[in-house]
Image (cartoon, rainbow, N blue to C red; front, side, top):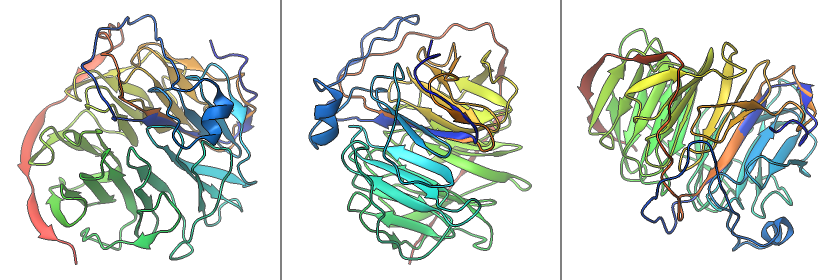
Length: 385
C-alpha cells in the first residue's frame, strides 16, 4: 500500500500527472497482472533531477496537488513535497515523457486568476512564464518531449519553447461565447483536440487546419483526451461522448462513456473516465467497467494514465488521490502519503514513457461492465485564420 508515503492535506482535491515517453518504443512483451515492475533510467533521483538528459521509465514520475505539489519518482512508493511557489490552490498539471518537464497551474489567491508554473529540471525549480494576458488557466497538455505546451484559459494558448512563453492561437471553435473545455495534444503534437462546452475541433496537421466534430444536440462537453499516437481520441461529455479510432476520419457517438474527465494510454487501449466513480476500459473504449475502488461513488475530477496503462491515477472532490498499478483493476488511496486538504479536489499527473515498455496483461474484473451503443459521424473541414 501507499499508506505511509505522504502526509495528506485534507481540505482540497488533488490533481495528478504522469510522464509519457514514446522515444525508443520496442515490441511489447507480456507482463503479470498482479505485479508491476518498474525501473528508473537514472542512478539516483538527485542526479535525474539536475540532469536535463535524464529520463524516467514509464509511470515512475507522479504529481499530485491541492495547495502544495507532491512528487514521486518511484511510481508512487514514496512522495516528497516540492519547492513549488506558495499558492492558494493547485490546478491542472502535465509531465513530459522523461519526467523532467512539468507545467502546473496554480492560483495565488483562492478563486482568483491562475498562473502556470514551469519546471525543466524535474521539479527542482519553478518559474512563471511570459503570458499574453491575465486569465484563469484551467487546462494544460504537453508533447512527449515537453517542448510544445497547450494552455487553456478564456482562449487557446501555445508554447513552443518548453513553456518559457505563450502566444494566443486562433482555433475556429463554433460558439466562441461558450466556456472552453479542452485543448489536448498527441505525443508529437501532430494531432490536436480543442473544445468548448458545445463544440469540438480536430487537427491532424499540428493546428494548421481544423475539422469540426459533429456534436449531438443537448450534449455538454467537459473534457477531451488523445492517445499518444493520435489514433484514438475522445470528446468527453454528458449525456454522451464522441470518440474516434482512426485519427479523426470518423467519430462515434457513445452513449455509455460519458463523464467529466478522461485520460488514455499511448496506444489508446487503456482508458480512464472520471465521473461518479472511476470507469476503466481495456479495449480502446468499446466497453467500460466501474471499478471497485475506494472512490467508487465519489465525484472524480482528475485522471492520468501512463503510456502502457499500467499506472493510473484518479482524484476528485472531496476525495484524495487514488492509484492503480495493475491497469485499473485494483485501487489504493494515498491517504497517508501526503497531508491531504479536503476542501478542494486534487489534480494528478503521471509520466507516460513507452520507451522499452512491455505489454500489460489482460485485466480480469468482477465489477459491472457496460457496453455502449454507437453511431458514426464524419468531420467537415475548416481552416484556422
